Image (cartoon, rainbow, N blue to C red; front, side, top):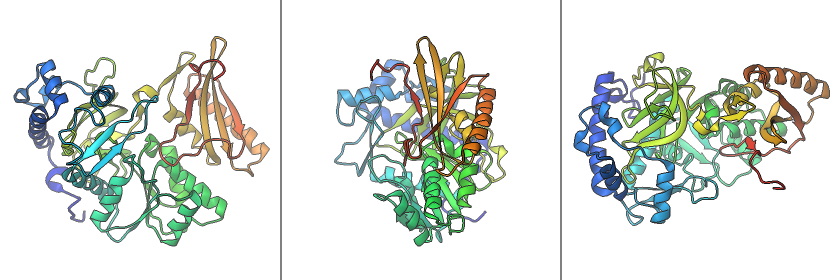
Amino acid sequence: MTQSPYWNPRTETLPRERLEALQLAKLRSLCEWAEARSAHYKRSFAKAGFAPDQLRSLDDLRRIPLLTREEWMASQDAKPPYGELPVIGPETAIRVHTTSGTSGRTPLRALDSRKDWAWVAEMWAYGLWACGVRPTDTAYIAFGYGSFIGFWGLHYAMEKMGVLNVPGGAQTTEARVKQILSFGATVVASTPTYALRLAQEAEHLGLDLKGSAVRRVILSGEPAGSIPETKALIEEQWGAKAYDTAGMTEVGTIVMFECEHQPGGTHIIEDHVLEESLDPDTLEPTAAGERGERVVTSFGRQAIPLIRYRTGDQILRVPGSRCSCGRTADIYEGGILGRVDDMKLVRGTNVYPRAIEGIVRSFPHVEEFQIRITREELRDEIALLVEMAPDYTADGWTAMRKDLHKELAEAHEGLNFRIERAETGALPRFELKAKRLVDLRDRPMGA
């Protein structure tokens, strides 16, 4: 493999024992830093009876108390605007990003120092290089450039690598498609949902996206980037390879990426983050090959130490030996599988949005869809609203509806889905994270 500052065999090919020794050293340093400078960690460590000098091995990791989103938000409410986690104030920071709001509450606010932001860009550069992006590329960033962290780090990583950036903020979908073609972009970055939306717009405009210069589509922001059916549809519509990445505002950057070998999952950047897989109910470590909740400790962002943060992401961890690229860090099979709280119970059957999307995206004529769960008297009902291309025939819809109904029932223990065709343009469109499941069971009458 070509040598680069973003392909680092010194750490990315470390044997497991040496990698864990590096993680332990970084963990001790991070905990000492947090205890000395963060009011939150000083208090939470003392309450748990934990001291950094108790870290003799990674088995001692579980002495450290977990951090939840609710605790972080409560800290912000008690000491606005940034709470007690940060070790710096706004006078020292150079950037602030926010998450999207949750249930009407104030979103999380994350501060970064100059050093933190250099690390954020470098982690993205590691992932982009692994996806095959090179300095000779032209990258189109189909992103709104608001306060959500999204593709900000990717933008700076492209600059760091010497890639020509075309920022696609404040544009209509039509304008973005035309710019992708007119600038000769070879790389496009977007959410999986928006990659499909861009392809639909190109088709409606009669533009040849498959014949364009685009060779790579970098996906992030949604689990759909690793759903095989969704990824295959994106690759077919773009005539390009699609690569999944995942990160979060709380960490500041991506923590996993799919390399050019595409091993069916994402490599964890284990020399810069420490990842655990815990049972969300018992908080005990999951066994190899079992799904669990992802808990992350970040070594790179020091303005806001993030130690044992419960992400709510559902993952399945497998050994790095599954991939032949040479990286030894473990892999999350299928990337982020969804949210721990995404699962819905409908008449005794577990329903996962990711599983439904995998089935729906195997039908290539679907332009958009929405899942609606309602309660009718004492019975739960689930409906799938499907929006097709305007010229899709009634006969084609009848046949597809029958096949779709059958596949959904087989995948959900015989659960009956009501399948309805939505009017053209009736369903919401998304540029960032799509919200396709609407649970109306707890909505007040008349709302």
